[in-house]
Image (tube, rainbow over all chains, first blue to last red; front, side, top):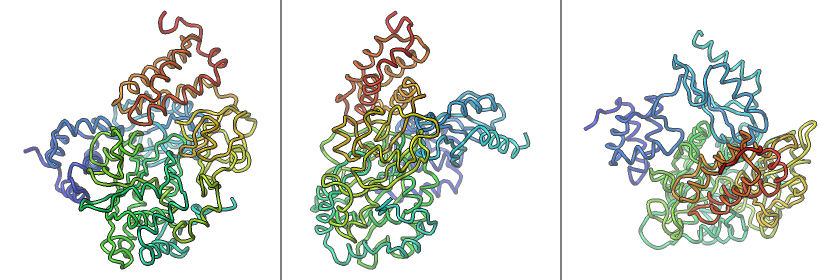
Length: 162
Length: 421
């Protein structure tokens, strides 16, 4: 018996499970719920999810590590994900990425020591008509240029009095 | 655009609401189908319309429905493929956010035709806002009796659930999608058995793309003949072309199938951006072989683009100007497929990784012209040797880039020692 998740999370998990004839099918949506609530999917969370869905923990681990959106360590408060695929690259995303790296002192994959920012590169976000584009957490920003990016980063920093 | 069927009124914010959709004649097709037509009649109408799958493979949608066995007690399922991961493609995202009820209505008709009572929308994880909007539309439809135990009071029951992916290109491939929906890694299945016979949870399953389903209400309401007034006999109807890259007006353009590629770029997307000259076009998403500036007088339908040595795929057109180094395009292509190979088949897992390593070395100026032959050899050894189409998708663009732009690549790979010293 593993430690339970907070009651509200356990309840949302059971609601999602009811949508499928086999509870194992709820694995992806359940992992989304866990990550949204707890920031990442820890080994302990994997064990609890496995228990709830009647799976071996290794089955949960292989899914967590297969899909790029699942995080095993929490990202920063603001997770910047910059699309580096073709349509964005054609419209100058490389220089925007360089600007992010410089302004935040991060390379892709890294998090600031204060846990405020994580910088990642991602493949096509499906918003090529607004290229170049990036995500801040779940919000998409399109037609980003250097001025817009600088203003966005300033705004995010100001929100936390930096 | 002369004949906008699917995207008519897309600019209006009210279209996305149930009332806005109803005000434009929404759900009349579902009412007609469920009240006045037999499932067999509906499938026949969709077959007559000849609509080919808009996800990329181009398989006739009506035939897919017809393959689902109607005997036996096991449940049957509909999967709406909203995984839209093909780089350059964004039409399904826009359809789902501007006109979600057309997709729901298409799903109702497809389900009734194939004897299905449960549908899952597999939407890519990054489309979080779109997934929320779709959930709202589904809730509205339930509240007003367009979904649930008795759709439109006919006694036909249908439940629709939204299922988010989590960042994996391969899950757009239909059997990988099924695996993912069952809570597993997205590893494609060997076919046969085909999903129509043995799909989700081992049961008969129809998998249709969002754009395909959104076109179904028109076919049912106005008839196959009306649908065929646009497009070609071999590829009827309109399609939503996604245009991005170095054009003045990137965006979606709904146009009849068979429209010339040059016309889409020059007339609809406004031509190349200020001061830019065309170098190359990818006509059907990143998996499609590249066309040079001299090759864009091609009709945009499945068969014509195939005859021109490329593919229509997801109808995503990426326009590349003369100042763009082809080596940088090649670098993006090989990185993408190396990242997205699921790892199941050795030729793809190792081949994409090797291609990536070789191109990175070229980018550092440490390649040599003979490496280009090695790239062709690697790509040729992936092609046709994998369970799913990702192998070909990784190989074909590389082959086309190297073969069509060889002199430029020879100049840019550097004069280093190369892989074998």
